[in-house]
Image (cartoon, rainbow, N blue to C red):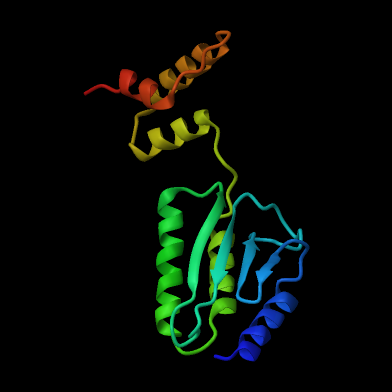
Length: 168
């Protein structure tokens, strides 16, 4: 892909990712796509990530250097899933420009996983539900959590609380 073709892809990406700050060009062969589930402000953006793109001299016949950076409210499993999806798209589309397709796929992933971060208390309750805790145990843990967190300068860690109150 010649310089003109790379410039064409960058120009297309600039016109597609038009929301303020979504596309950040570093050079003729390097840029960032700052991705959110709803870039136009059509909804809440609880998650987000940036895709750092560096064209290699032979792109798209060889892979561009791609890196996901600055994740917002995404866990390691989600980031790994995004990297896996990105690698699959790169492999499937080797030989043709694919950055738009990758950006769209990552944005779709963000939409599917656009959930607010849970407080420690909410995480504890969710973990207890997943563990199949009985109602009595759940109620006791909830009461203990609220009492412990009311003490000045003290915040209980949900894993410790769960461990101490689970009957083995």
